Image 1 (cartoon, rainbow, N blue to C red):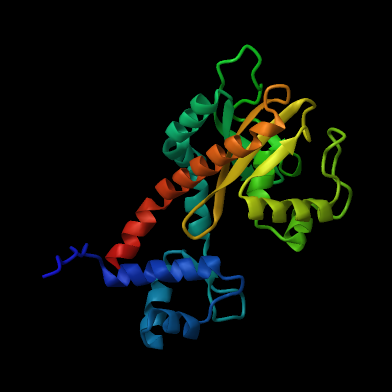
Image 2: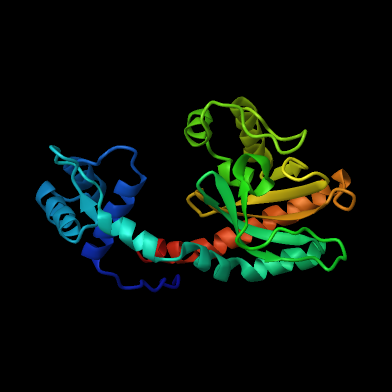
Length: 266
């Protein structure tokens, strides 16, 4: 007989409540009671009690004059109190260290912070001449490999919302200056899986970075290596970019592990 897979016990009402939060958080429009009932496969009265419980605790809210649901202030408060970047550092640091050691080049871990990429962790190469970027440094999204990796899934409308329609600031002769050019760059990153920085922010420097994705596909960070162009040659792109992509994939799998456990127990 086939061996039965042990089922992890769970509380159905709590599971349904969390399902509601995920649905509302990922929707671009307020979610109706009917949509929640259909999602949970329960009657409207049961969906209403669940939603109202979440609303009572501040996790859901209803726009003025409407009866559908959006996220409440409690979600914002929790997200502000929890240091997500610190969690990402804890999960990714060993992979970051392994990447830097295997290529003997400086490696950075970054997240998006407004119109910039924020370096939240770094491991430096064992060279006399190394990249100076430090943890805590902000660099422009559109002019760096880390930043472009974080933007990879955005379309033209979303990019214009972030940067506006004016020409982008020029840092070097290779800096991307327009939104259409940035759109083409993002499409290329999606196709090949990594972003490049051809001395676009600092003269004489090259960088390769890949987006860190959860199982859902959401980009939560970027990881990559930087080095002087005299040492990081174009002929190194295939091997270096492959290592960066694989590292980003492993970190994404580590971050998604708890999500997989939850799905298996449902």
